[in-house]
Length: 92
Image (tube, rainbow, N blue to C red; front, side, top):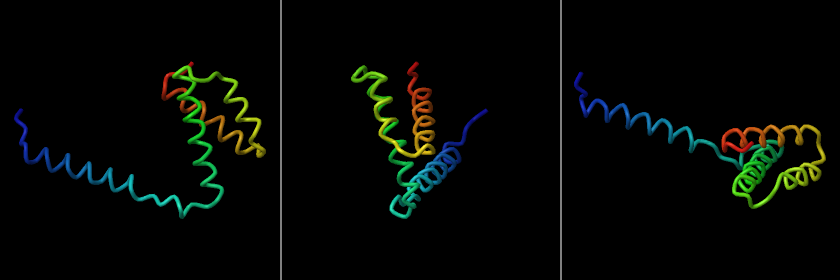
């Protein structure tokens, strides 16, 4: 089976353009305050799990951050984000 380079390039190029278009189509300034807060909690979870993986902090940092969150739904969102990033980063 021979591959036509030009055909492959066109498929690859359009896939990249489609992906880039999707990634760049989000304007965070247009999000509601609740959605912005979820993004912030997700970023904090990612950072704390990264620090945990790099052995720059312990699990108590995650617990400490959880105590600062007042809303039960936000705590649940934060905990889900922590679990997601632990899975993604391979942290036990």
